[in-house]
Length: 251
Image 1: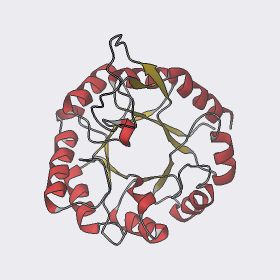
Image 2: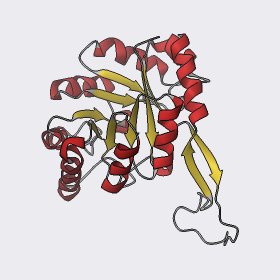
Image 3: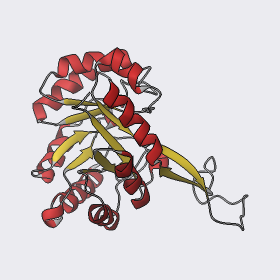
Image 4: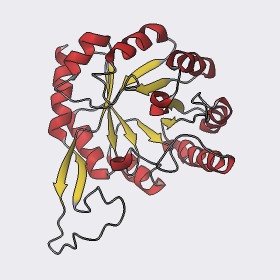
């Protein structure tokens, strides 16, 4: 396959450098990937822009948790979008957003504000899509709003299990909107998912877990979620990305 997207999701400069080295052709930049990703700092964005050469789509998610936002949170995220989209000539190539109503539909009012704030930057609908109650209605609404891409696992815990829905989404999307396949993407599953869906756009972190350099450790104290070790550092592996690229090129 020649015309594919392999987007590498990164939350550190080291991961971005490794992702580019491995052959990814776009970044999704976030913070706190371990909890699903939140809005990164402008400082990190500038570091990645300075030290790599790939297009950058920036995740805009102000907090961990659901995708049902109040007016203050929507305003906060609009301001974040503007900060990244209008970061001089080197602004974000795209922003990755999403919002739902309490009933599980796309929050059209919030999305319109996000799209307006993005200006000329592309707009990607993130996996809030996977939490909505009616995927085909959400797909139609995303098309109507002019959204460029939907990131989805097919409303399942991983893209393999979600492949039946992903296939139908790709068929219904046509040329109007791109379907970006995520959740559990690796070199081991890409061929299977491609055969099941025909999808050509993939999103992965290619992460490895690095042991902390700390030699003194207070294991009984947690700085955040008790289920997560303070001494595991997530980082993209260039080798894992390269393996995925090899599979894609051989399809």
